[in-house]
Length: 459
Image 1 (cartoon, rainbow, N blue to C red):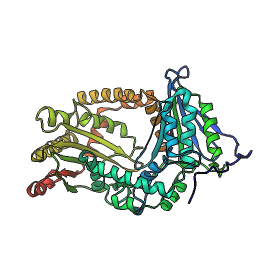
Image 2: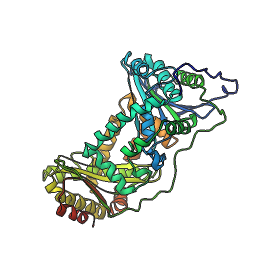
Image 3: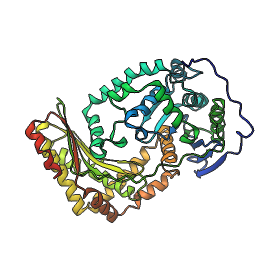
Image 4: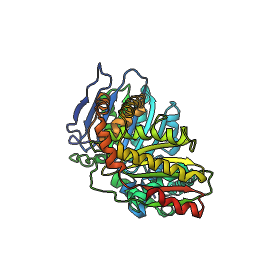
């Protein structure tokens, strides 16, 4: 069994210190908003955005691995590993990791998605070297000890139970299964009780070694920072861990693929003794690289993105049938989803579904008015900017952009793409997406006769 004793550090050779490639991807004004990228020998990418007007910095490492990279037997391994990287390295115990950031008032966390995982820390700008050292140590030197796997299993099973106790959250996992079926995109990110119980330390260690080499990682940092200093500190941390085993290795490319969703008219009901029925009605959407995604964003905003949206007005404001009702999109490398969520009394679930279906059909056939589209464009532009007002959001944007698209887009360019969306483009994407026969997922205490009628909503 591996111990936490210190291990010899790899000494960087002159070859390992070969030329790094640095580019300025976005040139800001007076240094504000400048995005730079350095690719180190060994395939590690480091992207930064400079914001001198703040006193904080957010440092993150994005891994090119998510739950869609798991086999059925490994379902939940990516998320399990996310937990385990906080449990200790050869240099730090779990307490050392958490206390290091707590001692300077920093925040540290991680999240796992279907196509990527991110570990991050937000600190005062003067404490950035500490955040870099701790997070890099976690990513390169975690031990994944058997006793930690056994202890953390209980915490993860409690997290699964907590999710299942929240039907408003659980229904989205059910909808993914309704649309994708029993494949990686259709399985829950957390895994299941059975798969989590079956995972062993040896399996997780192999998964870690396969997916966490430098070619699969993107370092992102935003705030009151200096790009060259960040690069030097990150490089030193990875070299200290001996992570650069092949200086000629190239970064993995963004995901591609040709998956197509063919599900239509499928209904899944999960009976639960809840006060509300939670429903998601939806259909295939767009991949995140689709050129029509800007028009899709405007359509989604107009349909269910705010208090003035069609669904909010028709379901809540005019009829009071639900407190929460909204639409959303999920884009993956090769496919996507569009969904409408509502939580309502079980006795009114059919009325809510009928109204939502009528609105989707009406927009598919007749489109949205120019006024609705103009309002949605303004709302989307405003929310895009307001959502990027802190260093954590900036780090997320540049890290995800590098990992998923392999390129960066300035905020001005994003706003320009949204503003350039035409009513005809919105109506076209509405016909293409909303014209599909929808599928339906429901969690709630529906009686047999109510359940039997659910197919009416997708007929």
